[in-house]
Length: 335
Image (cartoon, rainbow, N blue to C red; front, side, top):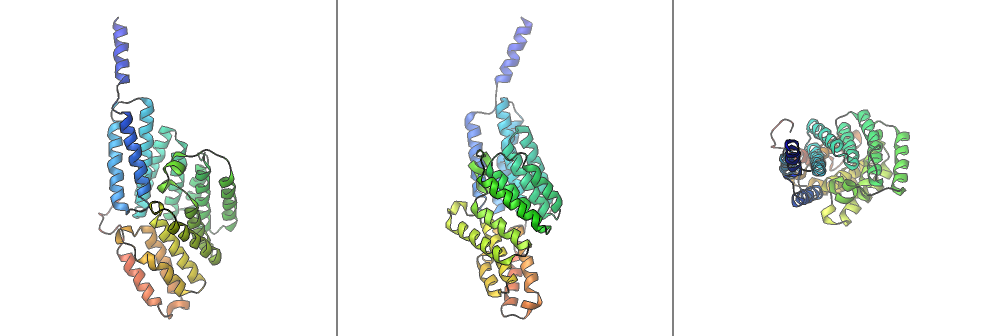
């Protein structure tokens, strides 16, 4: 009887839970809202919201719940850590982004969720790319394909790999990845929770693909196809639903468009492309814009444009833009 009572008491504790269906539904809704709002809301307030929701998930994980609910909470913790990695890169904190993305992958392992593992590998590859470790980025993008069950996940990872190869100057590898991405887009596969259902930051639609193509072509020095790709990306963002319009990706596509104009010798075309970018509110001026605009300034300073009318004015406007970015005023250090 003592053994029977012991088993009964243990079963009772095992059945108890601090997580109800309503709580998980609310957390799912919060995560979806954050992922979709992030593309059109400044990064700092969104990062605060990400941390608020993730703290709630962490508190719940400290309690007791059914194994399936524990796995669900690990997935949510991983998604939120991935979102924070993205926000950290936009604010220029690449070391912090690396920490967040490694945590996100660990939660993907705990929840055994391939969509999270695939997306996280791609995010980590980009962190390495922005941190001037492109070969490590290639390795991570390739390793992500092991988990990419959906066509969208595969297309994204192959586009990331192509972009990194362009930084390394390997046109053959770029072409290989682009062909593989085209095959993946046309191939079969199931929809993915992150890439296809939640979307937002996690999505990889036609507009984002064209933006990536433009960035890749710029690195290879192919100005005319880069112009076509960036113009297509800008058009797709401008004509799409406003809640899906990524100000960051669209602005970066405009900077790449301006760069392509400069390669072709058109200062006026570059200045026109940058008008909406330089008008961005300070809290939307992400780190990648500052870095890419630095490349534009270096091109303007070249002998071909040095004495051109409007070159100095454009350079001054870019300098003023870069002096007031989203990261300005945030306490130093990695977080």
